[in-house]
Image 1 (cartoon, rainbow, N blue to C red):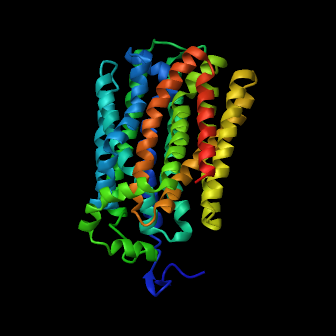
Image 2: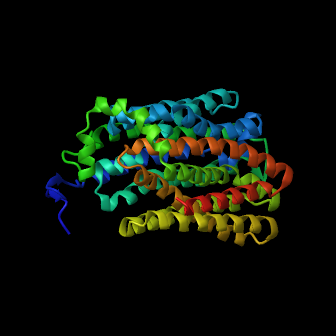
Image 3: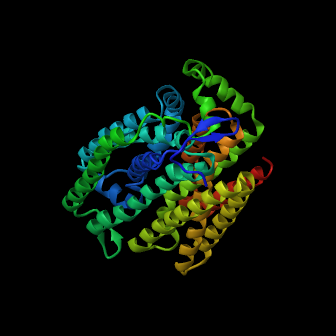
Length: 437
């Protein structure tokens, strides 16, 4: 194996080099993204308690999650343009500064009469999420050699997001439920206790987000001195002004790519279904099991941890085999079958152990697909810049997610398992589409 310390020759004598600093850049990016996603899902695991605390409705509590999806739809074009215009470093710096501002507004909103401040702060923290979701493929292309790109994209995007979600799934019930549970049943008493705990909880998140500002300024250069691959060097040689003028043309070209459009629909269904399950799993389980807080906590952690492990394994497999399409099809089919199994278990099994098993399989499948889809989108649209395909994949999936969360929430309330069967049916449709890409 050739050393990373010396420049290498790629193909026709193009000088390339993979710098060890790439791992620091990846770590800083992943930390920012993990913190941002932890903030996204902070209130989901304790939705009933937060609804009692603020005296508001399910719609507004769900809005604390939906603003992230809606924000992406509104800002995705700006995110793609900003990455192209300013580059990865400037976007990361701007994102972490906005993240800190929104985080401190959430702290102010921790008072029971300040829900609207909380919602504004949550909306502001959704902006960095939009910017960063479009960047993992760009980061891996800018800093990593081809043999490590799928793994780097998975770590920077889906895996760091899942780690952040796991943190909130573990901490939110542990901090909030202790203050608001009596005999396993949510209560609306103890406002002073929950206010105190929520204040310190959100303050901790804000302090961590603020500490990431100097780390980003110090740890993330604009670009490596030499590109990690010939393809990256060719992109860097293009005039930035020409690249900006071509942004709309790139989008038009992508939408003419039939294989990508099919994959766009299929991946959006799966990504949206995953987001819907993360947002509503407590609501669905409550209707069939009346689970304890500990069981809800374990479900959330299991689905994310199984996904993190599966994402890493699948990412390494793709880097080794370069079998994108075959892996995508297998993962999609596995995920659809596991979603069907989860629906059956929730509806017809009384032993909660099988919920753990089914949710672990579902989490492994859906999250490993999430780790693959951005890099596969880049493969389908090369040589169009990575942030363009990532932006489209994320934008369409967020539209699907907003619709599915509302539809599945309504169906689950009125017609029991029909919402879960809808997700399974959509997954089956997406699996069929992936076969024909």
